[in-house]
Length: 149
Image (cartoon, rainbow, N blue to C red; front, side, top):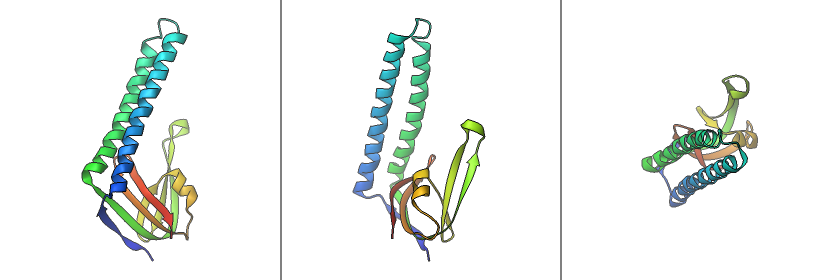
């Protein structure tokens, strides 16, 4: 039997985890931009020294901004959902085609269907008693906790 999803405020630990994710995203983006820019500057011919790293850096900046803005939205809303129960079904859905496509995974707990990432999909099977704590943003759910009961 599934316990109805319950919305609660973020805990101090949740806020620290979100802030850590924001910080890690910024650090990763800066390091990747520096490495690619320096690598292309020193290892390529003059006609690609500027264009390729700037294109990569722009793309990286866009992805990082989108990720950080979603995490900040979760912080601003200050809510997460807690759901407990037995996984009654699962499904996968292919979005796109070829190499550019991706697979979305879903687990159903009671009458509540939740999109999960590949790690959680592999970790839990139909029949498992679970508890998930998550917040939803434009990128999908951000999991604070996933455990077996």
